[in-house]
Length: 193
Image 1 (spheres, rainbow, N blue to C red):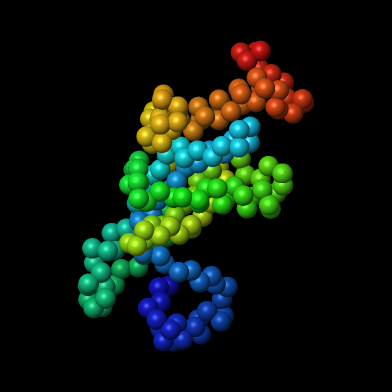
Image 2 (image 1 turned 60 degrees about the vertical axis):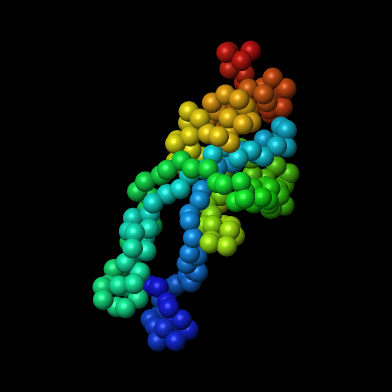
């Protein structure tokens, strides 16, 4: 349900009183998915890559905004489901400064001592006035990282070689093994010994 204003909400609130519901603000902007890797070995946070997604018919509704506003047509947004992903890079003035650091810091407060580590993604919306709004944090490898499996400008600047998220995870495990930083109950694979 999309609400235009408080009067629209008041007229339709009777329906909500009889149901479970969640109200969310629809933030107008560009969806940007930032893929990070946090190393507990070094304490370093890296941006691995970024992607942009197209979500069913929601992204195309802008083409009909005038007709929708006038009530000439009625198109219901379909549920959010990514239909296409595109690798991207943000312009320098749109750096997501502090977002990843804040997520790691808060995760360490919630689940001390390590908190969130390894690969994770912050799903954001960048508004026309260049503000980042966090929509979701995915504590895992997200599908958008597949687009940057061969090369990403972000990981390439850190490593001067192709560095996918999977390869970065493997390197972290190898470095942990070589520095004896893993729990002693882990066995060392033959190829690393």
